[in-house]
Length: 180
Image 1 (tube, one colour):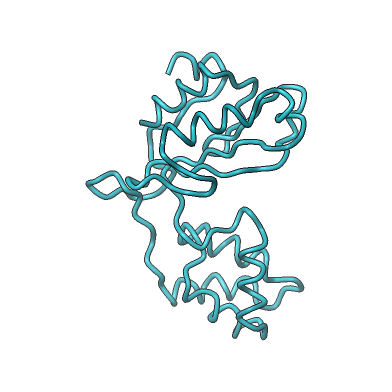
Image 2: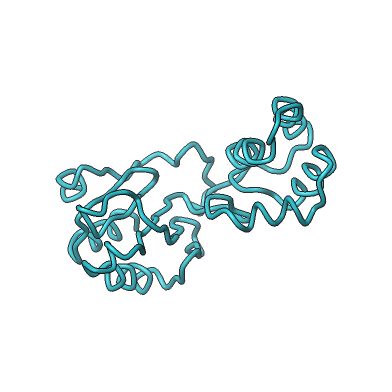
């Protein structure tokens, strides 16, 4: 944890508000139509309700569960294709639960110019992942992002919502070690 403290980022030992099963895999809230109805009630009369509604559904369930798509489509008088299209278009929406830790690595040009792709490959290879995948134990999801606004401090990443700047091979190793 020492390097992460020096870099100003700490990996949170708690589970980001998720319950964790005995094997360490995050337990997502099961689809609950009455809970979804309550979320919907807060948004249904708003202009442009879809995006805020999807954000709240994801906050409640950890992702956008399959049954949420037709439920939302019917409530907002949209097609399932329209709702699914929004979920699949925006990078921050997930149709599968993320891992307990989410590492977003910047792939924008400024970070690429200071070796971000090699650092990304280092972490992906260490965990046997490809972009957007989650470790089998549910511990880590690695995602690409394009510009965190830390261009002068690249290569940059975001770990569990906290920015990490000036990544090096050593700091990537330390992050990987802390995650497990």
